Amino acid sequence: MIILAATPIGNLGDASRRLVEALQNAEVIAAEDTRTTIQLLRALGVESRPRLIALHEHNEDAKADELVELARERDLLVLTDAGMPAISDPGFPLVAAAAAAGITVTALPGPSAVLTALALSGLPTDRFCFEGFLPRKQGERRSALEALAAEQRTLVFFESPHRLAESLADLALTMGAERRVAVCRELTKLHEEVRRGTASELAAWAEGGVRGEICVVVEGAQPAVADLAEGVRRALSLIAGGARTKDAAAEIADATGLSKRELYQAVLDARS
Image (cartoon, rainbow, N blue to C red; front, top):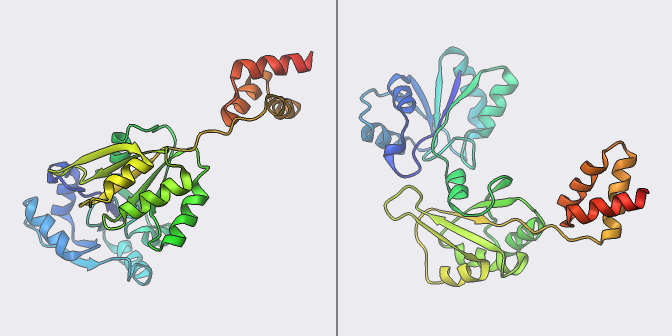
């Protein structure tokens, strides 16, 4: 069996009892950085010394099959330096290979920089998408942001402190200077900070230099407001396909930004 174990993203007090027990009982650990894992064992007072196997971005594809075979014989605990394995960290190729081989994969849930930043951002949390790290090169980064400019879900990114100001400036350029943004840094640590403002405001702030590990949370795009006549046409098309009038009007209103009440009445008038 393969066990994905979430580790603290900053504060060691966030280590779960299940994580500590798993570390104490582990015979084999696949770790992103074995030195970090040794430090974690010491910090949590774990005296056992399991076999440690390096599993990082440079070798995870080559190691996956080997580790899957190992997991047929004994439990394999998988750790990254912080947070949940496979979420913008090593682990995905291993999980995919295990799934294909019929090996059980389970998880010890715990700290997540993505969810922590989202919860603290003050931006909508009901629908969101995680985009990992933005491209390092400006042209590729701007292209990636332009492709996401119309995304209506809240966006979460990781970013290097050295590129934060440039990325926020590119965000303001591609998504609009007034797009709401939250920069969350050093989450759960002593100097935790959440800065909220517009893309242009935070780009100017970041020019002064920012340190630490950073998550950027970006407001989703507002729905494009359609012409009422176009909204009626689209709702009638849904109704022709079997949708109820009220449901069709609500769906189109949510997608376009039109008033549900006005659209519903306009659809009723069109059908009468």
